[in-house]
Amino acid sequence: MASSSGNGSGQRPVVTRFAPSPTGFLHIGNARTGLFSWLYARHHGGKALLRIEDTDKARSTQEAIDVILDGLDWLGLDFDGETVYQSQRADRHAEVANKLLEAGHAYKCFATQDELAEMREQQKAAKQPMRYDGRWRDRDPSEAPAGAPFVIRIKTPEGGETVIEDAVQGRVKVDNREIDDFILLRADGSPTYMLAVVVDDMDMGCTHIIRGDDHLNNAFRQIQVIRAMQGIEEGWEEPTYAHVPLIHGNDGAKLSKRHGALGVRDYREMGILPETLFNYLLRLGWGHGDQEEFTKEEAIALFDIDAVNKGPSRFDMKKLLNMNGNYIRAADDARLAGLVAKLIGPEADEKLLTEAMPVLKTRARDLNELADGAAFLFKQRPLEMTEKAAELLDDEAKGRLAAISARLHSETDWTIEALEANLKAYAEELGLGLGKLAQPLRAALTGQTTSPGIFDVLVLLGREESLARIDAQAGG
Image 1 (tube, one colour):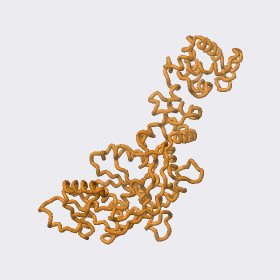
Image 2 (cartoon, helix red, strand yellow):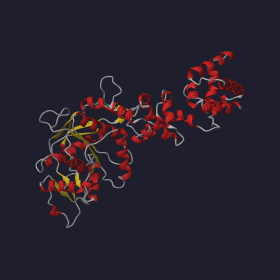
Image 3 (cartoon, helix red, strand yellow):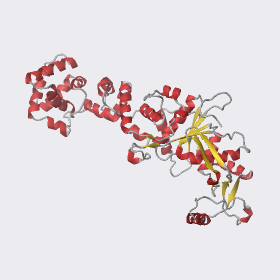
């Protein structure tokens, strides 16, 4: 079996695959296994392949496929070669099933649905495990009625055990009596998931299968197909399996809708940067010392599957948002301005946003917060006030705004330093703290009670717009 790490002399070049099913969105857990597969291949100088498992025609719409491809592109995961679509390979899947049939590793099963239902009821009554009992395993197909429908089942070993040296879980094994003769081809000739996956993995030359540990039981079945085909076709080498624990919510339960967003697109719409989600998913179940944040280049250089935890990781939204705030502060101002402008709408001025970004981004934890914080720059007069902002603008405050307006009309140096000195002097004259002036002034300038520093706001709005907004609320 291939080594779980490294690609030394005599080993095949590493080939991984990510194989999502298009069910409407790219699940955050699937995205993480996709990331791990991609990083493992990049770390070892191998290939990371993409396969879309679109055999469920009712759910596998082009729109659903596009959502997955768009999410992977947004995360920055570029896969090698052409994308493989499982639905286009049904003939090859059937070919493998028939080769196994011809070689005696599979057989035709003519059991009817009624017979199988009766079998399950008897097993249930006897408190036995419910699995196919092999009733057609050694029977001659000629015993079936002429033209009767049949499925093709694999002959699994009847004794011994199947052992997998999993790169994450370690040695795992199962008694072969627990693996029933599962179906390869249905009665209509269509392949089952269990067959299609393993045929595609082998034809794509996959050396490492990195996926969620909910697939561990599947591995014991899929490896039976690989071993049966080894004497029939070349290239059926057992891959290294790495089954990654699932992601749990902060309460320790399996991640579900009640924990919040589940899809990559959801986080994008929440205003999470792609580099944040890339880094956060990387740190869910993998680590390198105490380091919390990694560039993509660092992740490729450091990632290896043997550092993935055996236990489930916990998704912490607060930690994700805090990390996103760090990435926002580190991001290029012009890039942020372009992203925020799309959220604000056609009235947004990217040049002004770029100039304002060093001030705007200091406290924002997501792009939506950033857009909300920048919206005051593009408001039309008269400003719409929040309820709390309106409460600040009582008669006393309006009188002070009128006095502030008079002082600022005579201010010739419209800079943060000069404006701060001017208003501090006025606050001292009144015997007030600066905040008593800043709060109604902020309401008048932004229509809100929160904003960047008040002197930053005055400078960003400019002299003319600032005075016009103050005067509108002062009654001037």
